[in-house]
Image: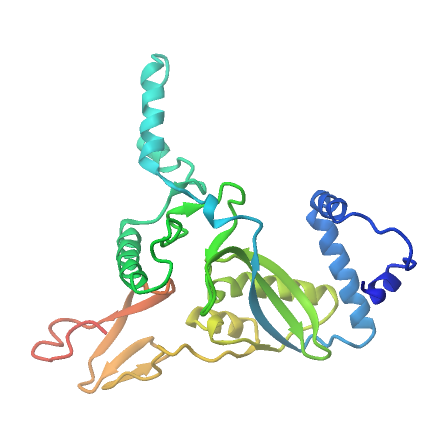
Amino acid sequence: MRLDILYFLHYDIDEELPWHSTISRTRQHLPKVLFEEVFDHILSLCVKAGMVAGKIQAVDSAYIKANASLDRLEQKKPTNELKSHLQKVLAQDESAQPLEPSVEDELPNNHTYITASQRQLKGIAAREKNWKMRQKRRPGSSNVHSRYLSNKLYYSPTDPDARVAVKTGKRRQLCYAAQLAVDIQALVISHIQADFADLKDSQILPTLLQGLEHRLKSQDLKMKYLLADTGYSSGENYHLLEMHNIEAYIPVHGTYKQEREGFVYNQQEDVWICSQGKKATFRSYYMGETGGLKKKYYTRRSDCKGCHRGPVL
């Protein structure tokens, strides 16, 4: 029994407490706006008490287990099944007009249908094959529930927003990603939000930054420094923080290369210049293996004729 909590809630030691299910059900009916107002009110009290300065913020994430089971997961359906079903229904109705190509592209792709590209599906198939080979050498591999689970192919019918996630040394589970910001003045939580667990921290940082700045602005506070781990690092995030005049202390990812052998980068022109004085200019973006956007630079083939480096950087 937590006497401190009873004292805080003004309950006597022999007074009957409300049932847990009553609190849980009541909380489900409370709107999100009410939780936001309570959080802002408590934050304002901490600001008045001098516990929050707003200048330096540290952000991090944690998985929150969802109230759903991996055993209840169902496979997603190909979008072609939905389109073919609509075509059959329209074919039976003589007065109905056929689907136009533009309409087919706008068919709903919700959580029950596969939205992954063919390239992503091939990557999933390759990872699943490797996973099965490794599982043969592990205890419990013969269990019927032992399977490779991808959010691209499976969903939870009881909690569609939950995602399969895993951390090193821990088992897979359905959960959400909680993003927290802490003011280092007195370690007070200055902002919190929930996101899909299959998103990387670097992908969530822009929305986290927007919510955090809005929260601090409502308290007449301005953030100047942001602290985070490597998971939040990306070129887009560094640029975004720079545009907001925020100095970031985020270590770069281990695969980051500050320099390229034989090339010098010209930031003003956004070009790479090789040892022969030829320029490799920016041409397009492409999606990297980790899901982030990367830049592709090309030089003219005539400039690189006979050079072993080739026209692409």
